[in-house]
Length: 472
Ligand code: ADP
Ligand code: G6P
Image (tube, rainbow, N blue to C red; front, side, top):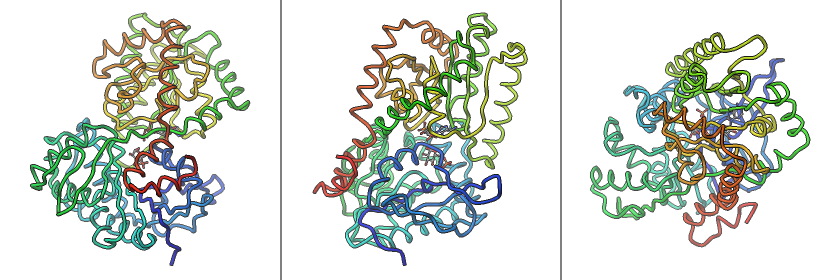
């Protein structure tokens, strides 16, 4: 049996991903996505256990510790991967929680698998939690886990944090298993969200569906008080600042600038290839600007990084095909020999190469149709210590509530999007500096360490938990 910990984090993914190297060997790589980026940054020097899936099928090979962080893998079979992860989590909950920008699918078989797998995660967490430990459950994949842990281990403190948006009641009410999903989450002592609105939505639903009483920050349910609140997640600002100042990164950035065209303005987008990210709307806006002659390939270039994601899920495959067709069309119509209108990169990058891309971009275009937070926007700001560069940011990203000095835009409004891109391209250095300084001051104050401290000290009033983090 594995040693027990006083802090246990439970997330669908471990921070390392099982990846097959070109020579067939198994190699470990940092997992994609905001959750892994955020938690990895705070847990790296903490004595804790992270319970999660290692990215493969069947029993995971033995996993190395990451410093003082122990990893406890949870195995998934092929059927479970399809029903729990690709099915219920990513074809039912994910689209529904993102404003149903893609039609959610309700499948009864997936639900059964979701419940079975949630129980497995709860049992693994119960096994590695020492008496009186804190167990911190993450995200929509594991919404039943808080209540399951409460039944297995009533002695532990239970936290839950939802990284994605929590939808308005009228959307949540569509879920055939809404009662179980709501009750499962309310098994926690503290439920955290990215935005206040989410806590309000949950309080309303709990009152209506579960007969709970209380307010937006405390729900009385099942004879207990469940506290709720907004804790906007962030990034390791110091790490990104340091990374983007490294000689390798600066050289890479210079090389990229040279390769893209020394005199050209560079528009950059970096997303998982996901329909919530608004990639198609963005391509349409860019292509119309070229068509209208408002921008020219001889002085502007776009780089779209779209890291592969959930590749077996049908809606993601369809999206990839559509994006690749559109990129081909735009390059075919507007590109010139040796001068494409768009560089499309459907591949993962390591952090240093991402930082070099951020340093190269004159305009960072972050235009999701709905996003819990969007850490890419914050990473860009942290990488621009020289106070240059413009951030175009969707109003529908959680980050918009904090980064008020970005060029904010409604990505559904194509004319508005086109105008905002031009405004960002034409902004004066003084305007950009003012905006960037204000945004950097905000994220420096509200970095990932502040997030973890705020959440953990709300979960545990004695402050003991928060004191265990590597940086105070
Ligand atoms: P999401 O969690 O929905 O993917 P976020 O913007 O919050 O969106 O987080 C994405 C994270 O994944 C960021 O930390 C970003 O640096 C990382 N990332 C995005 N694209 C790539 C890529 N091509 N290669 C490696 N990491 C990436
Ligand atoms: C979002 C979710 C995370 C998830 C990440 C990457 O950030 O909130 O829970 O890990 O996307 O998605 P994936 O399906 O690859 O884990």
